[in-house]
Image: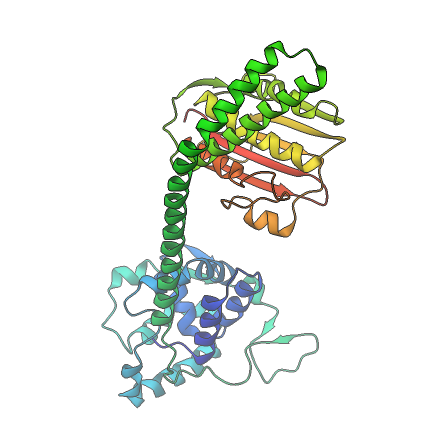
Length: 418
């Protein structure tokens, strides 16, 4: 069955829109009240049962139309050749459109057989018996007679009847092209990510062999000198060398982990104990900076099946990011609880909230990209959050960041009983 030119243009605009917009269902709802062909398609193709309103049809059609068109051989519109080769059929559609326009919407489906029969075989009685009934309580205030000029009444549709002449806009082809482009983008993104990991793996292995050995020698010799060094200033200098050597080693370890993450060694892990351990390990980094690390957790133990060392590494990376974001004089709050927003599967929610300046637009967009760092040069390789993402994925979980005018919250979700 053909669509009107207006319906084709509206659906094409919906398919080409880059983002969902609240205006589309409303515009589609108006179009359903005007184009009998579109309403019949929406009511029958989706298999609605019982009573359905025009607004519900519009929402359902908006949510599922692109997928339906992209996977349908003929799409929603009649082939152009059917109408182009048979002007009498086109004239019949025009007459039917004018007839339907004079009827209330609840009467469209009972006589839809005359519409469908113009381009199709006779309809089985069993199918006709399963058709829904259409209710339109919100359309009672819409005057369907264009000649009416009652004050305060919105006139819809416009005076012209639907234009069912065949057009060059093939919705099925358009949707399939959009679906194909989206698939290409997904594949391209996956290929880029695979190439990044391959390059990073090669780079990390080179660093591990060429740099880790000198770092180990530097750290060992400094520790040896530190044991017998009586001068306080020299002891502090030696300890600083040791700390920086370990920091460089940890950055290489982050690269290695992101490039080729190991399989987790699963066991029962109590999350409150993990958070306490991270807070204890992070005390040295906040000492003298006016920073406070706090724990807020449920009274009941929260146990997950996970790799304890990996979870500690993930939470420690989030805490380190929070500390770096604050700088001095602030607070980092760690918490864990059962995520109230998820039921199946139930998830444990670990959050790290800081009182820092929040995320910039660029940092929010690229926070999980490898090599990206929101800090100044020389403060890291930008793979810390990538490591957290890898750990979450190994536990069938996810990581997210949310930021306001001040402060940022990092959320780590892991399924309970993973």
